[in-house]
Length: 111
Image 1 (cartoon, rainbow, N blue to C red):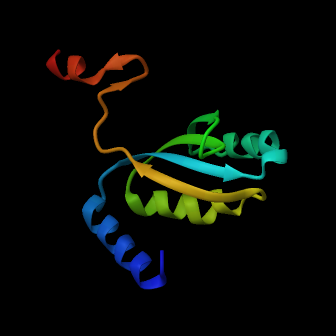
Image 2: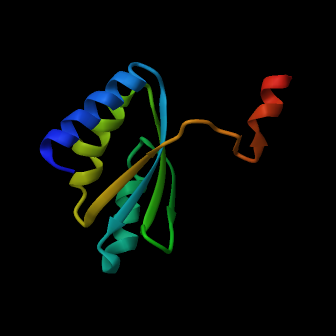
């Protein structure tokens, strides 16, 4: 993303999510030879709820939750991206949760 496009994207995301809680899945590409060491460093960050070593386009998948979009952005920029061996991140914002921790969310809302 170019500088101006990135600024526009950040403005839209901040406006859309505002002060609402955000949940995200973060895909990380890391130095493959150091994957276990990097995974341990990432897992030790208190903000990380779940972390998985995976195959495919990403090496690690992390689940996080923050009080607002600004805190998520600050976490990625100031903590996650500064870990040696993290080459790239891709953040997927969770819009709707249908099932989590083995429980259907629709069933909980009906109760």
